[in-house]
Length: 192
Image 1 (spheres, one colour):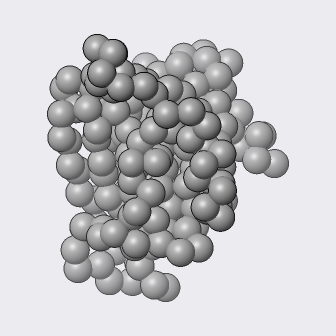
Image 2: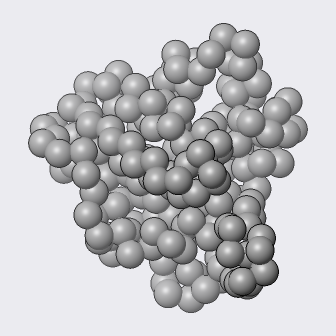
């Protein structure tokens, strides 16, 4: 198997680090060599958080360069646009449609871009945009949106559904396990 490159992008506090642990565990459980790298940025202040997950027969480096990501898992649609140059030709973006205003928008120095998903689609990029927040809320907690997003992306991540579900079960703290498994299942229902 060629190395599979997944970027997880979002804003601090959205659960991207847990998502990277889940995907790393799934890759290990599937028998792959896996490397995970976290780049925090200004995560404490609501800034971008980026995590790389690379897996395959043999992976030397955890870093993904521009044009190498097979999948960009985006917790917020502006982050999907921000990291688009990292997607390889033929890659897929799976994004939550949530909008989190960055500081320039909050202070009135800029406007949040309109029709981000449509503009990405116009570039002939394969993008799946769904409301992971709503799925998580329906499952019992909006905090499970990160796991709902993993469920939405399961068919492009290269793992069997049961391997991913087992990784969710292993990585999520006990008090939140049932809600997260329900969020994963809701997302699976959405993709059929």
